[in-house]
Image (cartoon, rainbow, N blue to C red):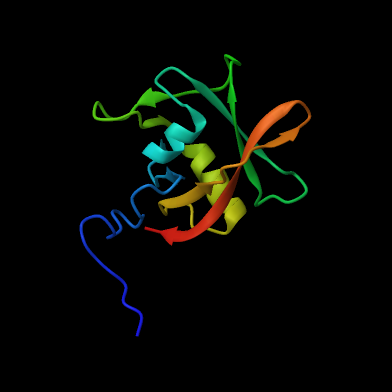
Length: 133
């Protein structure tokens, strides 16, 4: 017999295990970084990010932290910790469509820990999760 423990520490919150490195794409267009994702990427209020789609493999997405003023500006989500977010409904819909997810669904993507270097950019790969809300 192998027992799986459920308690306040191990029980998923909003479909995610605490400490998961992920981004939530809300059906209303809010894109939120988990505390672990914010920590990994060293994201804070006022930082900017760019998302990249592989045009040859349209379901492959990457995140880049940037100084480019055209990047999406992040805002502090909570005063309790360093979680950040931004809003862009058309981006949520575009990503959802590329992943085969219904556009009016909230979904998450995991951020892989080890970045890739491509064309002088440091890119964090985003992987689709089966979690949809």
